[in-house]
Length: 98
Image 1 (cartoon, rainbow, N blue to C red):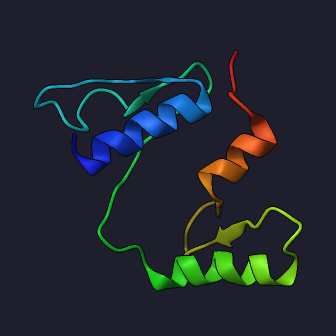
Image 2: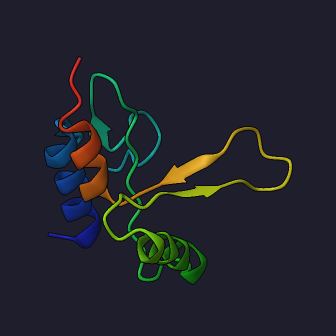
């Protein structure tokens, strides 16, 4: 099984959803994980930006007993992004149902 499929299955199991199995209809009609409250898209890469990993590590260093969150905003972007580890997301919210 490919790494991206494993990631989708893990996200679905962790967050209480179901992985959408698609043929060649990648990213055209439905998200990676079916969920009653969340729209979940999974991206697997050989390498993630060091900028992102360093931000989470920095937050972990300051308060090791707390859940680290990295907040990002790009110039001219509407809204912000909050990035945290999947395991920490699950600690905060569990399997999010209806």
